[in-house]
Length: 334
Image (cartoon, rainbow, N blue to C red; front, side, top):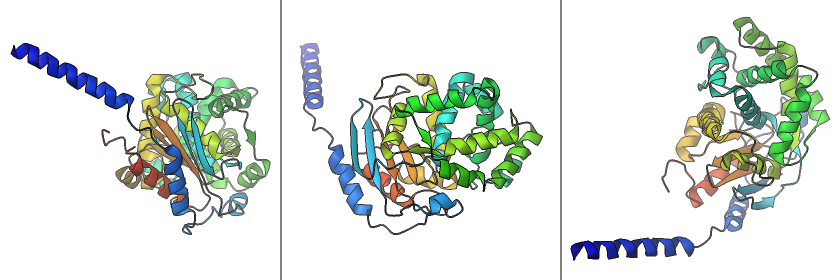
């Protein structure tokens, strides 16, 4: 008799659970992103990246938010069609390509996966980390990773291959913002010096100045907030573009990419970011930030004014608000 009662209770619980899941109130993503947009549209903190003239001239009032679900639904508010410089957000997708070609162990050995705790263009970080570039999401590591690709493909084919891969992530052909590229190329002597230093330590796998210029060109891609949402949505969807349904990186590598984003995606402020928000993310000095909720959706926000670490002020506030409203923190267990 007790066994029968127990079985009936278990059946009731399963039916109740299934009913609850079926009839659970759907998430109103539009309402949440509109709340976030209105809350922070008048935020005045931060300033544009004034060391790159093109970025310094960007309209500081521009602000857009996009959520892309793993099923391919797109929710957007604000300035989501304007093309801005992808900047360091590109590092995530260069890493994806390199990991897809060479595997995760090669990335760990030849580039690294350690937080520097220092600015994204730090030279002392290289010296302190046993003369290694530390990780693929700081400038040193990004150029090292890029050099793996340019050496692998050869100079005649490298750009075509990388360009095609980025287009697959965005679901459309991306173009280089020529004025941005020229502006950066005329002011990237610090990165050139980093590339030469890495070459002397054996962590640059192609001509260092070529790799530096190639990296500069990648940072000059013009993307919209919607583009970044789809690109990040590919990681939220286990490596499959949620719009085109094409697999771009092996599912087993996605957690490794997200782990690096979660430890160094917002540079020296990443620890505080993960403490407050709990989402693997990546920023760029063009004003974009992407955040990934694995298996659910991605968030992309664009706003040019940055904090001292080079992260968009408005974007951080908006993503923190959205994460809280949607219980998105990956450590919450919800």
